[in-house]
Amino acid sequence: MPVGERRNRGPAAVGSGVPWGAMEPASDEQAAGAGPVRRTDDTVELVLTFDDDGAVRSTPVPRVDAPAGAVEASDVLDATDVPEEPGPTVAPRAGSRRALRQKRDTRRRRRERAGAEGGADTPVDVDVVVVGAGQAGLSAAYHLRAHGFAAAGERGWEDAERTFVVLDEAPQPGGAWQHRWPGLTMADAHGVHELPGMPLLVPDPTEPAARAVPYYFAQYEDAFDLQVQRPVRVARVRDDDGRLLVESHVVDRPDERVVWRARGLVNASGTWTKPFWPAYPGQGQFRGRQLHTHDYTTPEALADGHVVVIGGGTSAVQLLLALSRVTTTTWVTRRPPLWRDEEFTPEVGRAAVALVEERTRAGLPPQSVVSVTGLPLTDAYRAGIESGVLVARPVFSRITPTGVEWDGSPADEGWADGPSSVEAATLLWCTGFRAALDHLAPLHLRGPGGGIVMDGTGVAADPRIQLVGYGPSASTIGANRAGREAVTRLRDLLDRAVRD
Image (cartoon, rainbow, N blue to C red; front, top):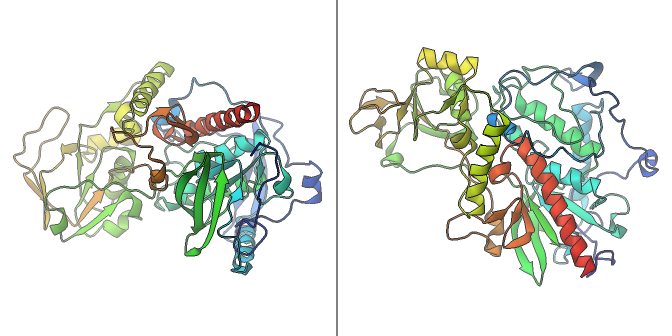
């Protein structure tokens, strides 16, 4: 069907005329084209502070740079990339978290009031479906807006020339940040980067990242009226004579479903839902607790005995430092930690990006960013090394009912020596995550190498599919730029379809 031809726009929710989570109609001012207040000074921003009830006070203050050490190496990788194209820019609104929660509750109640009649099996036509509303998904939605796409659910979207919808599995805004452990503050968090068009303001660096970032994301969704549909799970995506059928349902009500029919898809489903657990001999016999970073809450919860931390990334390092304040620890890694004391120059960044992109172009699974960039040697990490906390041993040979064992204890260069066995109350697996792509399985995108052959953000074999937050873009600033690239590619794809 040519772009611009009237499409089947509804019902997009079971028994209703609007999609799940559709927001209230725009105000008269918004309908007339008056958007949110724009930034007029790059040196002064609106800083928001909150009381326990969520009430807000705003104060204009000079912009504050991110705390020292708060930017992950991976977020420097794209520093020499092409600057963002100009787009709409807003300052955070002085609205309370309670008000944003009330808006979400209103949308949920509207969906729940919808009857159970009809609509579920009739595809709803949109041009682009965005799966996931984390950093990459919101960036893509922003750039879709900037290119004139209307969000499903807004006033008049049924008659818009080009449309999109964002589907998110989480019950509230925030992406994976809403699940991070409570002790991770904004000062300690690595890789928090502002979304395009709205500054990220941190009036209190001690505020938990799991609270501050979701609030920022909620403001962002509201400011740009992205109409995110949640909590909605995408079950599978399949081809239908050149179109993509995206089958989705409410997370806790599988019978409440919608099928979206799209010309393109931006997959920003991230990795949080797929923690990686490597297998070792004896793992099932361990009588203590085994946790993944995904499940970690506070160091105090693990203060009842020795903790073996497995993994060589930033999360392992942060949790080791936190746990060392309440208990004893042993750190094990597959490779000796690579501490980088040199500056992350543009040349280093370009080389690291090239290594990651080389794998995805070859159809190999992406490696972790740390495996390419190493760990930044901050003052806190240096102190951890000197105290013996951040000194790693090679991975154990087996797991026993009471701990772990090594076959011999010779230390290779870069690793520390130690006893042949260690008893532990907890094994903490900081072993990373894998891309959550199971819903794309019907498209058969994976190659013989186990990964997906990529051309930038596009799947080489199917340019309708754009993967953001995958491979070279698996960092927050990289995800921003990937969102822009993905939208540009899909816009060009739609333009070519019109010309043809």
